[in-house]
Length: 257
Image (cartoon, helix red, strand yellow):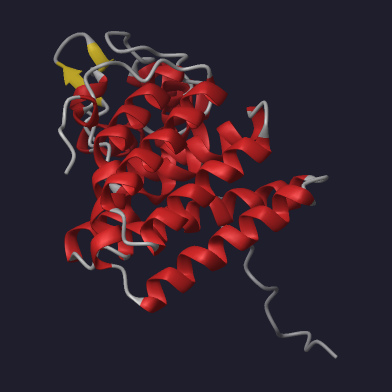
């Protein structure tokens, strides 16, 4: 029984709206393009009913991430994609949640992966140990299982998770501390392309076969084949997303052993 002298529990304060999240969603979705000005501080204060210091604090998050710049007397302008701190954990989190509709960002991520992942696969084919091969194979088995059963959103999510785990396992199989750490940083951006491409793939079985060839090339210690197989996997991703991967990728001009 509650004592008549006891005080009622204090209500939890309501979390204020996050201007950083609101603007990040709009910018990553492409509603504000590089060179565009975002709403002024006073407009944001009125719209979200918060004070100016809170608005400035949230805008500072976007400034620190390299996404916007403050121009005295004019406001805040979206910077060019090349200026964004794309590997910052906060930026990659925003990218995963909000960037799906933006083909420009997808194209940039794809170009980077085309530059990097064939070399990673080639190194993994030289250095992978037994436990690495097990991790790659387990991810591949999960990929195939969830592909065959992908009749609902949860199974499609599991399919994408296994696909990401497959690529991360290859990074770790290089036994290079930088590549291994980079796989954690890149995980959100890999997930972005994987989830989008898996939803729009014309022939999922072909994609699964490309992954199998990559796995077997690493397992059989064939660096050159692993390099080319990784390129084929990413070419399939580009095709599923309707993106042109471009001609500047490093792997197009390298002479393989």
